[in-house]
Structure formats: C-alpha cells, structure tokens
Length: 315
Image 1 (cartoon, one colour):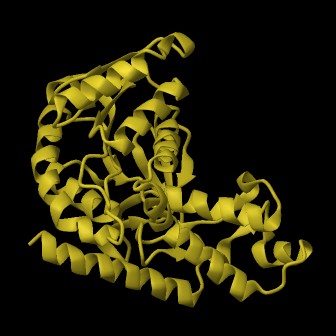
Image 2 (cartoon, rainbow, N blue to C red; image 1 turned 30 degrees about the vertical axis):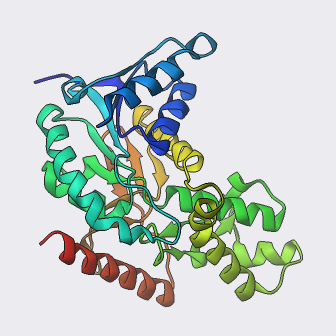
C-alpha cells in the first residue's frame, strides 16, 4: 500500500479554477509537491511552468504536469475538471455534462489513490460530490466538496461592508446547496458573540428584514454577476480551496461549511453544505447550528431540490 505524502496535492483540471488554485496553493507553502493533470497535457505543462518560474520568490517545491499514476501518494486530490458555467446558465444546468466527465475521471483517481482526500470543486458541487462518493467507493469523510465555503465568505464580506467591521469577526453560514436554493442561516449569525440583529442596531441599522434579504440575494447572485462581467469566477474559489487544504494539512479541526453526504433523520443520502469539523482525516464531525423553523424548512427544500436532480442524472 502506498503511503500518503501529507505535503503533496494533485489538481485534476487546469482551467481557470484549477490553475488559480494551484497558484494559491503555491503561495501558501502548504505543499512541497503539486501535480497538475488535464485532458490537455500541454495546458497542464504550461500552467506548471508558469507557476514554477515564480518559485525563486516563494518556497522550494515541485510543480509539474503528470498523469493519474502520479497521484498515488497525494494527501489531497482536488477535482476542478468540468464544463464551465456560461452566462445565463445555472449551476444545475451543468449537471449532465459534468457527471459524464466525472464518470471518466473519478474511477481513474480511485484506481491509483486509495487513502487520500477527494476535494470536489467543479460545479454543481453538491451533485458532483455525491457522484464522486458513489464512483470512488471512498468513505464519506474523505469525499467532500468546497460547498458553501465561498458563499459564506461572500456573506461575511458583505456583512463586514454593511456593518463597517472586519469580516473575520463575523460568524455566519450559508448552508444547503451551493446555488439557487442556498440558505443564509441568520438565526445563528453573530458578530464576536453579539447576535447579528443586536449588533446591527448598535451600528445604526434597524431595517433587518430588508437588509438581510438584500444581502442574501447579493450573495446568491455573486457568481452570476462576476460571470456576466468577466466570464468566469476563479480567485475567490481558489482561496477557498487553499483554506480547506490548510484545515486538512495542518489538522486544524476548523469548522467550515463543506459539502458532505448527509445522514441525519431529517436529511439523508444527499450532499449539501453544513458546518463540519475539517482536519487530517477529512470531515471529522458535523456541527448542529441553531436554525429556526423557516430555515429548517428551506434546508429540507434545498435537499429535496438536489435529490430530484440526482434521480434524473444518476439512475
């Protein structure tokens, strides 16, 4: 059995998201070896060369184009491969195209890498995380998606702007689907322990319903807005990938809203985002945050939406 190298990552897919993730990981110095894989070998080689030329300004590491055989000892295999989201296209429109791509990619990964963590980033991430779990045969804790880590960062950013405070002091989550049925969990949101509505009033904001609805809509539509303006999103998600990898490699036990297979009484056999403890072994536990009845109903509806899509594409 091949021993896992905790300082090695593999990225499958060298489009905008894959290459931006490789750059973010190079800058982070988390890994000493990164292998890039793409259907277009030249693209992978070009990205590896371009990033490698900046290594004299960073930390020593190997970045190279490879094949699936090169991933056998990778601690984390990051899958960004898939068709991109076009202007006017929802994430769920991508489903059938990308599930077909995963049917060729995931078995190859599972053939060569038996003990690493499979981090799914391609969209629609919840559907593809579920597909990757089924196609790989890996345990649920070692197959999860980037989920709503970026959506949650967008929420914190917009709340920070709204309240005039450091976004890192805001504790709030987007949960459910990474997409149109996502839910802002307002009832558990706080700023350094102060309930959100109370903190808003301290900062002179009193129209809570209007403000929260507007911010939640802006978060949900962020990707569409960026795609309309610059055709693709990649920097924010690349930084999200780096953050998740930090939690894994450093065994941080960080609480992040990654997309994992849910197995609760209310929601089961579907992948969606809930706060989870992320460490060396992947998802090491879930965190049951407080939700009000409206949020619980919306989460169940989000799960049902995803399940309906799964039935269509994974029959």
